[in-house]
Amino acid sequence: MNTEKVISGFFFILAMTINFGFFYGDPSNIEYHSAYELFAAIIINLIATVLKLGDKTQLGSVLLATSLVADIQLVASASVWALALYVGHGLNNESTLAVVSLSGGALLANIVSVLLFIGDTLKSKR
Image (cartoon, rainbow, N blue to C red):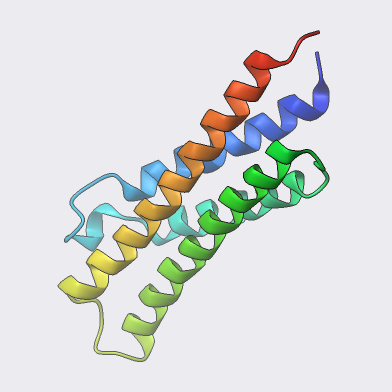
């Protein structure tokens, strides 16, 4: 058993599932989406990104790129939320849809990352 792969796979899948937990629900109703879950998704995604930094393979570069995309979209989602609350006039339907849509893009990047990781794991030989 490769401990490094277990740890990185754990964080990749945890990032995807927490992001899904935030994304799931009516996109026009912010009550279905927890700010704490978005914060946890950002932190776990950042940890997953750091774990991908040491991989110098071609696949490692693609995994890092997908993780960076997810990070950027999650931070943008949180930024839109904060700007709407503290600069704008509160969360309206448009800003809520933007927050959830950005997290959906991050979820898609996380799914691609997990699929690549699983494919690489299945392809590798002992």
